[in-house]
Image 1 (cartoon, rainbow, N blue to C red):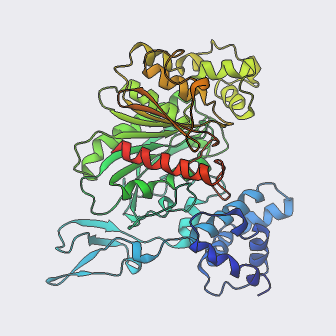
Image 2: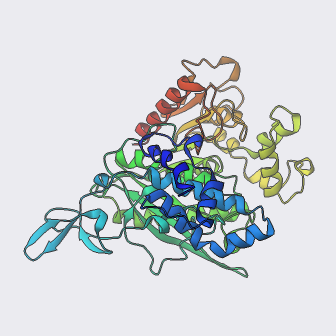
Image 3: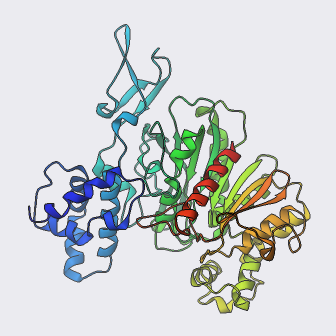
Length: 490
C-alpha cells in the first residue's frame, strides 16, 4: 500500500469544475504503483490506470529497458485516464432507458445495462442500440499514447456502433464550467475509408446528442492541430460538446487525415492539406445525408472550426455556399499568404506557425517559402470573401489577442473581408476597445468578431492546467464568449 496513500487525496478531483495539474497524480507514482503490483482497492481511477498499464505491459517494460522517451507519452496518457475517470459524471445523469418486459414498458438501470436494444421513451416506441463501456476500454481508446485509436473506426464491425455515454464531451477541462442535466450519448461511425500502400485509413465520425432531442439543431465541429496532430486539440474541442447538446444541438465531430507521421497511424498520415480538406468535405456530406437519422430539424448544419479547423470551416463554406448558412471560426488561420508575410517581416515571430507552414509546403525551413507556392496561394481565402461578401455565410469569429499559434490579424482581416474591405474594414487594432477583457466588433449584418484581450490559443480549454486567459476576469470573459457563440449558432 506504499503508493496508494499518495493517491487517496486526488479523489477529491471529482468535485472540482476544472482539472488542475496539481491535482493529477505524479505519473511516476502511478507507474511505480503498477510495477510494485500494489492493489487498487476498488478505487476506480486507479484501477483504470492499472488496467491501462497492464494492456501496455510489454511495451512499457521495453521502454524502461531501453530508456525510451516514448515512455513519457504513456505516462501522460495514464494521467489523462486517471483524471477522466476521477471526474466522470454521476450515473444519475445518464439518460433514462426502458425495456419491454412482457406487456410493461419498464425503466432500467442504465449504468448496468448489457449491450442490446432498448427504448428511449416510456411507451417503448423509439428503439436504440445501447451499450456501456468499461473504464479501461474508454481509456485505451481515448488516451492512446500512440494516437492511432483516437479518431479511428478500425475497430467497428459495422457502419455504426451502438450508442454509449459520451464521456469525452463532459471532461472538466473547459474554461466555461461544465453544467449539464444529461450526459449526451455518443455514436461512432465510419464516414470514409481510404486505401494506400500503408494500409486502410478508417476515418471516424462521432455523433453526440441528448437522447430525446428529436429536433436538435445540427452542428459539425472541426478540430485543429495545424493539420499535423489531433489527439490533444480534438480532445479540447470535444470537451465543449455537452454544453452544445444541453443547448439543443446534435453534434457531428469528424476526424481527418494528417500531414505528418506523429499521430493517426501510417495509413492516415503523410497526406497533403488538400486531402485533409477533402476528408472534411466528405464528412460534411456524410452528416448531410445522415442528418435525418439524428434530428428532424429543418435547420442547416452549422460549422464550428478551431485553428486549422477554422480555416476548413471557411473553405468549406466557399465550396458549398448555398448549403452552409452559419459558421463559427475560432482562432482560424484563414489567410496563409498574410500569415507568411507577418512571419517574414517579423511582426508575428512565433515558432509553431513557421514550422506548420514549412511542413505543409514540403520545405525544411520557412525561410525557403516565397509565397508563390500553391499551398500558400490556394489557402489564402480572404480575397474571395472581400470580392463576394454576400455569398459568405454569417460568421461568429473569435480570437485571443495574445495567441502565439495563429496571429489575431487573421480574424480581424476575416471580419474586414466580410465588410468588403480587408484593409480598411471595421476591425482595426488601434481602434479596439475592451470591456473587462472582451471586445465585440460588428463585421456585417449577421456576422461578428469576438476578441479576448489576454487570451491565447485554445482559450476554450484548460487541458490539465490553469486556463491562461487573463485571470478571473479573463475566465469570465471567455465563458461569456463561449455562451454567446452557442446561442448565436441556434
